[in-house]
Image (cartoon, rainbow, N blue to C red; front, top):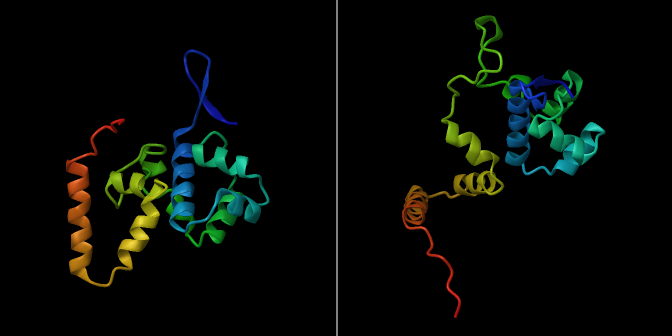
Amino acid sequence: MIAEKVKTGERRPNEVDVYVGSRLRQRRRLLNVSQEKLADALGLTFQQVQKYERGFNRISASKLFEAARFLQSPIDYFFDGLGRPEEGGAGTPIEPASPPFMYGFMAAPDGAELATAFMKIPRRRRRRMLVELAREFAADPEPAATTE
């Protein structure tokens, strides 16, 4: 594992590796592909895919290329949102094309499924009703469970 040293002597994942790993996880979940299925396609264990997705291990160029091909994604997808190296921005996220909450939403286990189902709703009015329902849920969280 290649990582940055912290003053205390502990190692932490490199920011670029964490970012690329999070984009790998986001794309995999968007396509509803399990870690096991991706691991099989790359000739790895699912534990290795987990390490890549968390940025604990750096994914090699050849494995990233294979992952991009398997996940039907251009290579630059995994770097989208990082600063340009020639501008001294390597590892520094720039303003992404999508708002930051979208990356978290799509990386959430139910986020990609919800987005896919939402886009399959043919009537705009029904999609609007779903948005209003989500706003209601967000504004009025469930009260704590009571025991009877």
